[in-house]
Picture 1: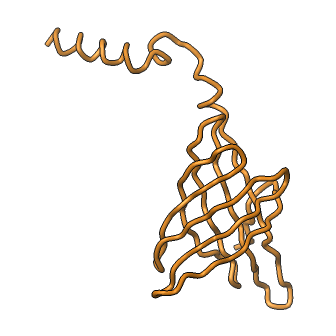
Picture 2: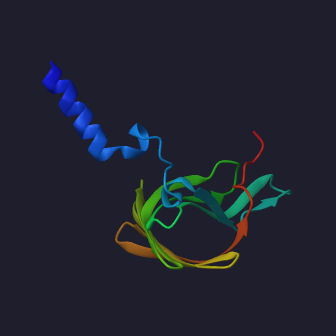
Length: 144
């Protein structure tokens, strides 16, 4: 029993010094931010939202990026596709899948804009949507 406890403590000491010794988590891990890029607009005549929204979670200087593609095609609830990928400087490459197949996002972050392309397959046909989205403070949250 003592050997098991010592083995566990040794494992924790080698893998989790931040927890054992009270050190601060490095900024590259702890400072995550949500970036929202959108052209979603409200159409009052139809009481609908239309447009594209990309929400990215970026943590410090890590290359890994998580995201979500929200496509409003009328109504108050978007079609959502989760994305994961990497960034290199200002270039991001993310992939995911939804009920229609694989989705790819290739884009460039330039100041307050995200430009690039969304690619996905419907049947055997590849679809592409060009992106030029403005940075927003928060994602669209239509009233319920």
